[in-house]
Length: 448
Image (cartoon, rainbow, N blue to C red):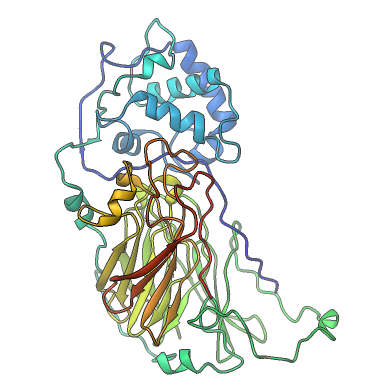
């Protein structure tokens, strides 16, 4: 079986902003002017350039929804300029070729999205100048007076039930003194050296390799897993499944299928953490799961963040010292990234670190604005120094992606390696690879 690791796909997505719902129906008196024919043309342009990811009816798919409460939470809150919305479309979309559409197409797509969200058409055509004012609030827009701390306090949501694992291995001792035939973390060792001491396959006989067995995993789509091997058993993931395989025969010992409860945006997963009889994985809608390593039974489920706002977990968690470590992905949809430590047995939150600084953090001075949806995802995995008791986290691009007009400064702690204390999550040090990233140059791989 050949397992191919590929980079995350770059899908179109607009920015998301957390909030609660309220608002009023926009009227012709305060709405941006556009015509029915312009919106009709926009429907065709949208179908050609946007519908594959955002859904034929703006309902969302590989990327966020552009209608209803999703649009209201992002743009229809009465506080965002129409020009900001247009700029996100014209400069950032489509994701595989940003800025490639004509201004006429971008204006028409804007008109189509506005009409689909209840904004009334009129007699005047939509122009860039006509988008200078704030978009009036739509039904379902977020209230303006809810502090960010209150909004953030509802996540993570702890497990509704916690079950014990039937096994206990591997423990810290096995992770630190690994058997030659094992591969116990995404990068094999906690230090991330990605090296196997096995010598049976070498440069002299690699050309003689033949297929030993094949496992059909029963799911089409992105396949980015890094297998975990423990005592002859292999654990792999798809976007929605975890499978335990006999590493010698590819026979499936058990399979667990996760059904998302929130919208998913970039369906994919890079692997699991194996620790203390449990298999940990993130989900496409922002959950962290613990499964029994022997049976695949769900032991607990933490809703780490709100998938409806673009959050997901694609990277392989790391587990050590009684904790499991993971982080938010979804910077390209405007999430506000965090790193988390959870109790490996119970799923209880131990600590969280904000990649995009919150109020009171001196690093906030590196942002002139935009921290409410500042990006800073973690895409792959992390490394651990057990001697210095540090967690090394690679972080992704700031948001909006490719557009830094409203987020001046270095945008800490995006595009960085961040070193955190394992016990407390307190920042020890950081190194930023790319300041004020305009090119999606994520620091995506765990340092060795």
